[in-house]
Length: 111
Image 1 (cartoon, one colour):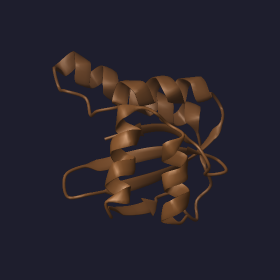
Image 2: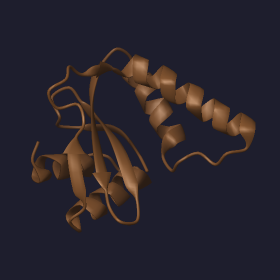
Image 3: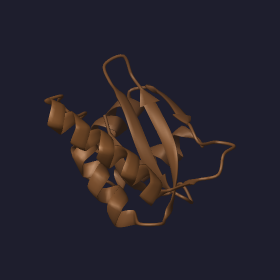
């Protein structure tokens, strides 16, 4: 995946986390397609893990990462769709991006 492809996917998502991730990427932040060389993962599988983490954080008084609640909802809505993971790392923030199987759309972003 090249930088412009990830930028394009993020521009299709108007969530606050995706907008922040796009700005970080445009400012030169490092990025990586984490799932490169691996098969995509079912959105349902990712949803169940993130939903558990989110509920645990809420139950224990830990503040969830920005975009986590929205990512849980969006991954649930994606159902059995296959998802790739990408990350963007800037000096200020780290983002996790959930991309469609064809890498053209951002399903969810947190960070």
